[in-house]
Amino acid sequence: MLKKPNIRKTAAILAAVAVAAVAQVATARSDDTQQDAAGNQILIDQGKTTYAEKCSHCHGPNMVNSGTITPDLRTFPNDKTRFVTTVKQGKNGRMPPWGDLLNDEKIAELWAYISSRRKP
Image (cartoon, rainbow, N blue to C red; front, side, top):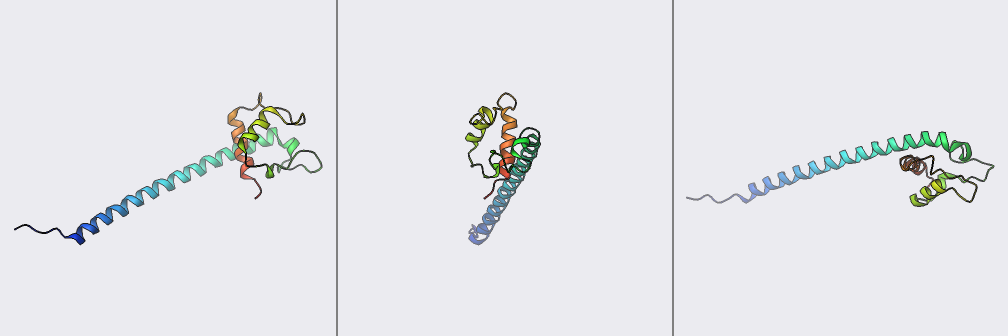
């Protein structure tokens, strides 16, 4: 005599497998997010160092230098292309070009740091 499959038991097993799969994906995503945050923090820290060495004498230690013509970098638009172009080529004859002194990696680190300090 053939036994009929127990639909409830089969459904419970399938549900348990699905829950386990979802939990595994969620854990992997959490690990990726933590790695991204750690990677971003490294970029920010390196950008802060480069900023202190190369930028703070004009733009101020807190990205604003009151009493000068330099802009408050905390309000710089969320426009990486514009930022990179300005850093590499200079601006209006007032900001010197840094393209020969800062490579793309250093400029990306600066962007990470400045972006992390952006005012809402």
